[in-house]
Length: 255
Length: 255
Image (tube, rainbow over all chains, first blue to last red):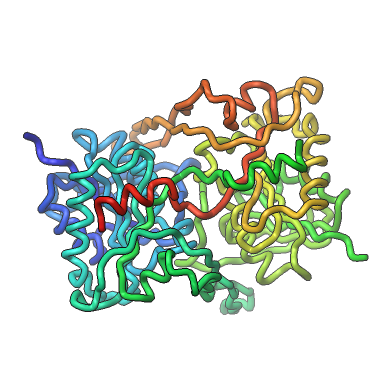
């Protein structure tokens, strides 16, 4: 029987420690193909490249069945993999491990999660992994057992079509992680500030900075609650953005 | 009494015909501030600029209360407007009019709709408008009465918090448009192909192309159905991507 084909991608770039760790774990479960951005693509959301062209290059960071860097976004990488580079249909798409959280509202800005959402659109079970630690020395191995469990169960069980998992891992030692919580995306937002600086020619430029605000810190069924309380959060995530509960309200005044 | 403050943005760039038309319509309803990308940003999805800096420049295409082009993405423009440039809280955010459809799955790739979603996150009622006509000579005026109605009703009625409207307008004459349908996002996908070309040095590069496939052409409650049948489609759109109906399935095998 053919081994499962596992596509691995991310948004931090093909040589980031997080994706190196993820591809090494993935190899236990099947043939691994890595197609990932050639440079950091954090915050790229669901961007695709339509006004310019893409290039790909064979690389050798992962010792994988197949490995290419791509000049495009994380979503471009998934499209390029699925439609051009993979030798057969992927059985699983893994994205990450992201260096930093993609919980709550971060899911819509995240290149890591957009790659997973795109994977699910292409009809393969998909999982985005993120570690809540922005350090370059982040220790991805602490959650190895849980990552293995989530991959293994996702291969064994039929994941709902079009849905991917948003997995966030707290910055804790393995014996401090209490387990997994399947939960919903917390209502939260970023309160931004733009830091103004001046270039040597006196012209202003801006850095986007911000502070994360959880609007419902008391709710115990959210990803933010799970992470704050020592659990790995898993949010089933979809690409249907329809606000079903507001269809009637909008009808009441627009029709 | 102070007039409503209306922020207008888009993804085709600050001087595109679609945004010029939208700002001119918006002026009937209040003070208009235009903060939009300085170049085309189609397909940018919910991308934000975090690895580089932003610049802004005063422009004068719209004869508005306030007008700046920004080097960033559509979402950057909304953040920059709300947190830095607007003199007071916006009462309404309008994005578009996009040159081309943002119905169905296009919502997740669309810079136009991501700007509207970001507007809603910043707690202002937000509407993204798109015309299903990619031509540079597209006639935005055919839907003027309907656009005015949607803006007027959205100002008069309290839109649900965090929700924006995804409005798509069929390419029809005004007397051919049958009215408005409030509907859900159709399940659909793009089947991509990458067109391979070679540069003068013999190196391959790729253009992303694709074909839109509606998975449920028979359903009559979707935006695709509305557009195919001569209606303007309005989908209430949210940023909570949780797949609530699959929480229990995922729990059943992960916990």
